[in-house]
Amino acid sequence: MRELSGKVAVVTGAAGGIGRALALRFAAEGMTLMLADVDHGGLAETAAMAAAVEVRPGTAATTGDAGLPVETGGGVQVLTQIADVSDSWAVRHLADRCFGELGAVHVLCNNAGVFQGGHLWTRADKDLDWLLGVNLWGVLHGVQAFVPRMIEQDTEGHVVNTVSVAGLFASPGAGGYSVSKFAALAASLALAQDLAATGAKLRVSALCPGAVDTRIGESERNRPPGLVTTPTPDEVEVRERIGRAAGRGLDPAAVADLVVTGIREERFLLLTDEKYAARLRLQTETLLTGHLPDPR
Ligand SMILES: NC(=O)c1ccc[n+]([C@@H]2O[C@H](COP(=O)([O-])OP(=O)(O)OC[C@H]3O[C@@H](n4cnc5c(N)ncnc54)[C@H](O)[C@@H]3O)[C@@H](O)[C@H]2O)c1
Image (cartoon, rainbow, N blue to C red):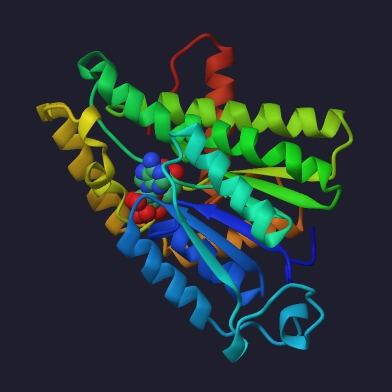
């Protein structure tokens, strides 16, 4: 889909980090936004920032050809919805609002995600329920709630699932996260293949960033009280390491640029660094020899 201006984008996990950067980047393209998250304050902040973004000159939104309501001041229309993506009802309600109030959805970013470290054998069911609930079920709920109506609307469209390099390489000390992200990658591949096989006009991207400078290392802030567990030393060690790595990571705005390019060029796998492509090749070759890949 080359033209984004005047189209509708939905972003989950939009209260900060990569989701916020996506919202701001789409706003600059002149897209109408529906932003969702569990964090009220952060979501309101992103919405205000997105509404204040100056739309790039030359887009349909600035020339008045968008055919969708545009707020005064040159900004784009921004709607918000509190929604926990692990809750299928909440995501269906989000989709109902989008199609009901905005009439269409062209770009769906299943981006909300949480991180937890720790060896697989120290993870409690509640830990895995939380990780899989947000990182896998969040994607699946987005697909269930939005894709049938996106197909039916019969326009070009794009689904972007935020996976991770942890969906390509098993991260030592973060097995639960990797399981959830490998599964999110499988969901993305299956969705893309099914859409292609049925001739739908929708494309799919699996966004697989390395470290990005966000609050992913502080994911516990969003854990529902019913799924809280006592931290174990291995979990704390990895969480702190990931927090430090994220602090040295990419600017989320660069990831948002990559996503917009990926949508325009209809690319499935979006990697933030060429070194991951080389590592993926090496991992495949090593696996085919029957040996365990080097985790670095
Ligand atoms: N930061 C990194 O280094 C990195 C690397 C690879 C992949 N990712 C992925 O990027 C995505 C975005 O994370 P981020 O790095 O911006 O972290 P972040 O913690 O800054 O942002 C995540 C957002 O998701 C929201 N969220 C958490 N649980 C939710 C739920 N149940 N329902 C709805 N929203 C929820 C949070 O409130 C937050 O706004 C995640 O899927 C993450 O796994 C991040």
